[in-house]
Length: 257
Image (cartoon, rainbow, N blue to C red; front, top):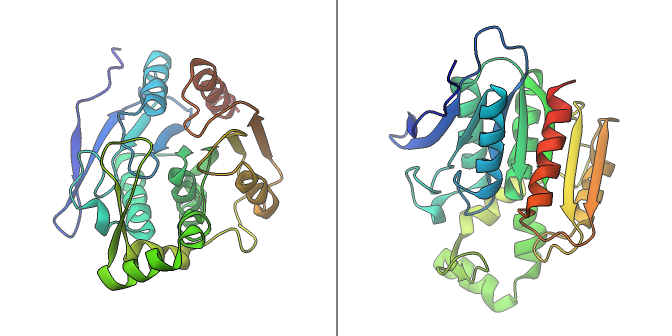
């Protein structure tokens, strides 16, 4: 069987929008869990980690799904209108509609937060979680808490502010709704009732999400099967060849359980 990845397709949403996705469908009878990749803030499914994982899954004949959230990549919507609630709903929509059986969720940065929220909502479908510089609660801890009084006033007044990005020419458009909605989904303040196997990868040279965030996450997770791997010279993206191989090895370990 030629296990080729399908072209980009779209999933219609009730509000008239659409989610762009690419999917590898496993052969009939395959018992391994599928893989769902959840991208980071303002990233998309064409990134190096998602692409490496898709190539690896294709070579193994394993099911995989990657997609763009609302306002990201080739999906509909304005980025500035996105919220954690909306992006989690997108993740649940693709899991419910485009996958069958148990799934391993792989979440990068913000995707690590979405991954956790999706696992809480669909615990019976989740075979494992892999977080890459997972950033739960980032809207509060890494955005709001670091904003000057002037930036907070501008956000309240204008509904949006523009923040420079290290990863793109255009600045991020941060909407007030993102901050306000994020507060309804904070996880690190209490016990996180997820009990599946969990693997976390985090660079200690990450300038965007402190590695201590993953330490906090380990402490709050209910699962006993949690392993945190710290990469001393690793940055936020963890996209070097060695980083990508570590990711593939980690996903393979969970897939073969």
